[in-house]
Image (tube, rainbow, N blue to C red):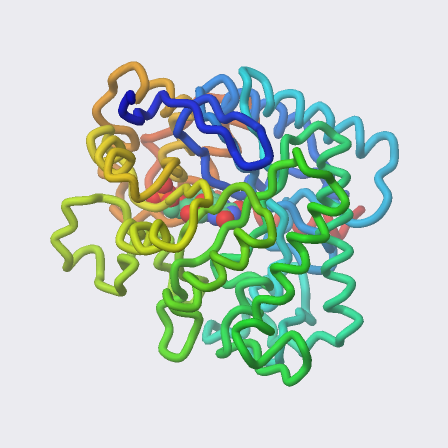
Length: 410
Ligand SMILES: Cc1cc2nc3c(=O)[nH]c(=O)nc-3n(C[C@H](O)[C@H](O)[C@H](O)COP(=O)(O)O)c2cc1C
């Protein structure tokens, strides 16, 4: 038997074959127009990613409800799509599926992590506010039972629209503290109905959504879920809970699982913690990925194709992780913001990707730096690695304000 390499294909349970072991992780783009529709800028950006060699490309989060955006420039699919909206989504799908790329649309509802800039009255499983400044996030109110049912219908509808537009599948976002991740944690979900209490009840919304998408989109549509290995918060969704939810997801018939961790209050997806809760800086991690320890545990309980995202930068680290059998796919986020062809480079023998991250001044540049480079790709420009973190954050804030005003002005 040949050893599994980064170039090995992988067939998912639904029958779709992924051409190699790279997955471009979801990266919010902020490139929609004033009506939250897809644009030519998505076509430009996704054309580059498709050409760049990743077997799977997951889109940035697309919202299922325009009242609750993750940021002003999100694409939204909520309700019947007119001919213009469909034409735009089809152009987006055509660009992103070129070069035999499996294109998954990430669907999301941000719940209490909806910024005040776009919403003064967010919703959550229970009225538990974020431990972050209220100037940025208004306190949420608890959702009614009807609203929970409506969320199921919205995820299902958006999945069907994505299928009709030509996307290979969807990814349900249940990580990083957004609504479905809020339902999973007893810290935010204090409901006493069928959606709260036991882990089984807290996971019911995610599992119902996955089954409903399967029912609507048929057996050969790819359904992926992005799940936290842990929220890393005392009394919150932890790795034992996560291991149980993974088994239920397998029973619900999903095809692909992306593992990450953390949320806005505890942003471990960006590298503050490993899956055992140790700080990445403190631990002598020979293995560069943050959530590998957890991936090994998952292997014991499921055969689901597993993609681990967070920290991968060297080809040796990726090959070692793959050879260990702990995972099936390597998720790449920040490296893909600059090098849209990072997978091709690695397959051609490059030792590392994302080395420019060390050059960014100040060293911890934050999201703005990466987000602005995505926008540059959308505009058909080359990435700008000389941009400083300070320049990036100023330009990012200005971009978000301008986009928010575009929404208000329509
Ligand atoms: C600019 C930017 C946008 C992101 N947007 C999303 C998103 O829309 N959905 C999501 O699940 N994760 C999102 N993430 C998190 C990444 O998918 C990934 O989990 C994280 O960057 C860690 O992987 P990395 O070390 O390879 O960058 C985003 C990250 C960055 C830097």
